Image (cartoon, rainbow, N blue to C red; front, top):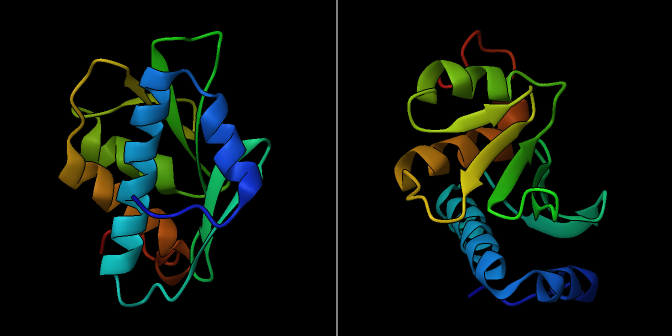
Amino acid sequence: MTAFKNDDVKNKFDDYPADIRQKLLELREIIYDVAKDETSIQNIEETLKWNEPSYITKNGSTLRIDWKKTKPNQYSMYFNCKTKLVETFKEIFSDRFTFEGNREMTFQKDSVIDLEALKYCILLSLTYHDRKHLSMLDE
C-alpha cells in the first residue's frame, strides 16, 4: 500500500467503516498504480477537497473518491463535472459502470469492478489536459 503523506487524508480513511475503507483503499491504490505506470504523469498529489480524498496531477483533472452515510452500500469516484470525462465514460463503458449525473461513477460494496476499464477512466482523468482537445478523449 502506498504510504500516506497527508495526515488529514489518512484520518479521513480511518473514519470510514472497515469494509468501505478497504474498498476505498483499493481504489486509492489503483489510482497510484495508474499514475506510476504512465510516464507523462510526473507527480500525483493527494489531498482533501470537499472533505473527500482527492488526486490531482499537473496535466490532469481532479479525481475524488468517497462514501456517504446516506448510501451505505455504495461508494463513488468523482470526476470534474465541467469536463467531457463522464460523458466519454458513459459512451464507452455504460455496460460496465453505473453513473450518476455528469460527475459520479458508483460502485456497490459487493460488486466486482472491471479493473482494466476503471484504470482507463483514471488514466483519462489524470491526463485530461493533454487530451481535452480531442473529440473523444481516448483518441
